[in-house]
Length: 309
Image (cartoon, rainbow, N blue to C red; front, side):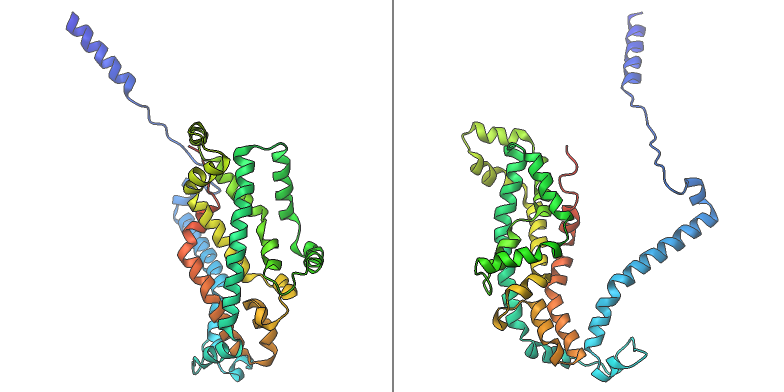
């Protein structure tokens, strides 16, 4: 009797420990039954192929047209209808563009401005995001909402008061005229704050118990954990500095201080079309390499800190 009771109890425990399988069903636009049918599969793959092909052509074709245009002669570029493949490809336009546009100096100036913008952006944006996330100042949500509201204002609206401020501070033809406006960015602050919010509060409290102040916590605890999002914000800041046109055009008026985008536009009227495209190809290489090397970090940064646990 005892053995039978023990066996019954053991079997009962085993039954209780056996997890139940829960089937999760996801609702989609097309039901699984329709998708598994013959016409459903055909329509699905046809639509998917058209969408992927169209999106790829929309993004890749301008780059292809720019590269092949640099390999054509000026007469072939002006020909109507245009040719999609160069008849006699040549790389002379790239060498001529390097000398005519003085691309080496333009790239050096742009890299210098981008490095300064990155440094100031890291200092200001990280400090602001850390204060809003961990220090919890009074009216912090109101301040964050005001920062996010600036993202809905078109840049053209504030360019005139920004330029007047730069003139009043006598920062024309001065790198500080580009570094100060790039120091605070609402989107970067939002990304950093969202990632800082996902850092466990226990780590901050443990550091505070050991006697670390707010700056020490930021330097020794928060920043080492936040390397992925710091890399993403760095990429965004550098790419923005490279592609910016209007503000450098207004601020850097001297030829030796121009950025890549401004220098190419100023000299474009005195050279041929294939030389312009050659210069565009050369100046696009740094940003293309940055994208291909760090594309994983860029995509991951858009969802960084959105999932806790």
